[in-house]
Length: 104
Image (cartoon, rainbow, N blue to C red; front, side):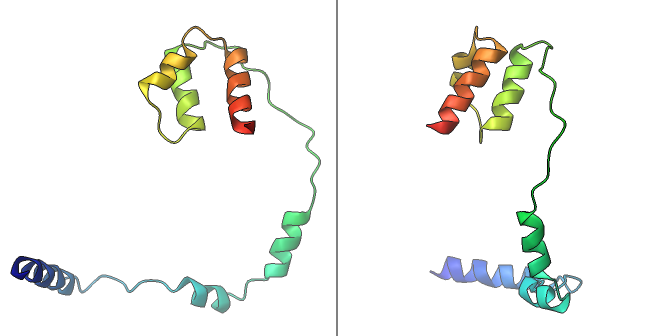
């Protein structure tokens, strides 16, 4: 108990030694100060835009570096077993697996 109290006192003293530290920002207060037009933002979200362009199919190499990049972009953390799952698969087959997992 005494150890915890001493630790808290040390933390408090360190915080006291930071006079240049700015106070936390109140985001709600800032929102009202800036007088943001929320209706305009919500209406802009409802607007439909016609997309007339697209992505070209990827025709480059699909080796270990590209597979690792794909896994890092589509997952929160990846493991060696994920790389093993993609071993020997083509890009087309890999995309089908990822889409199926996403829908399930």
